[in-house]
Figure 1 (cartoon, one colour):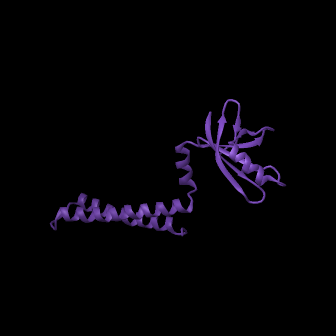
Figure 2 (cartoon, helix red, strand yellow):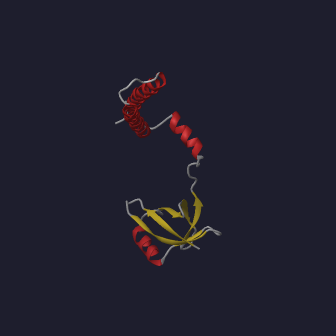
Figure 3 (cartoon, rainbow, N blue to C red):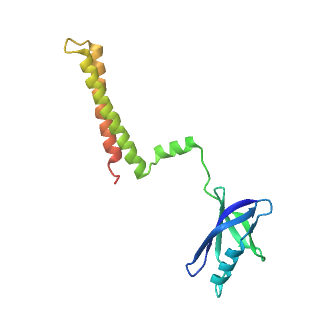
Length: 159
């Protein structure tokens, strides 16, 4: 037996919730007597409520079994995709929130490149630089500008 959370929604906008006993082998759901009495009171002149139960993160659609209980049927949920597929999908078609976060991240990387270039230039001193050192410093500044531009493009239409 498992304990589940049931939600009963009636046509007159009354919603009852409570804990129920659920037997996964038989699919039967047993309601406590207090919930049955409240259901009978609310149900006078009404049709049967829409009943949904959640057990261990799974949703079940409930149908009356003719007695004081319900029969449970698993509600199919969205297909769970692997994390690699979700990452690729978020890069192909990001949501507005993802675009905004990627824009902020690239702006942060641009700032890091500028700080790195300043620290690198300071560590070299003000003497004569070699061609390799100048190219490394120039590369950091170019990376900062490119990352800043990419961040602007990504953040363009996000609110």
